[in-house]
Length: 109
View 1 (spheres, rainbow, N blue to C red):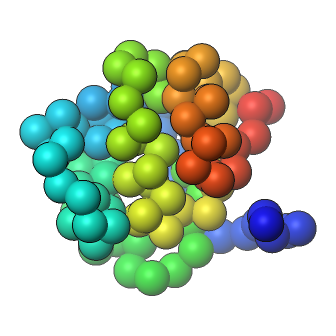
View 2: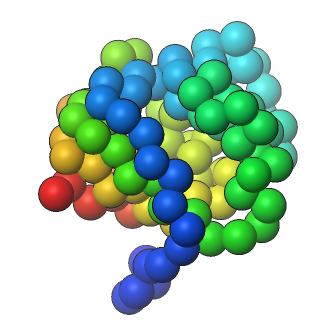
């Protein structure tokens, strides 16, 4: 069940952030949540996993967040990393569905 109020610090990213940037394909063989989370967003936010440091974070993005490959790994990696939600102007269609499937709160605004 989702929290009724989600709050946290913000990571701001731009437009057209694709699933390869969210979770690089070179790590698709990893399965443990700890390993997966350590590589989330690393290609666009260096040291992302260290920066979040156990605090609550929300990603705020522009247009077309999660475009590209249909891999479910991308929203799962974000969720494993402890991100509470993603707010974006728009989402890639398949990422949107996958995020809902894994329980990652997303808001289109």
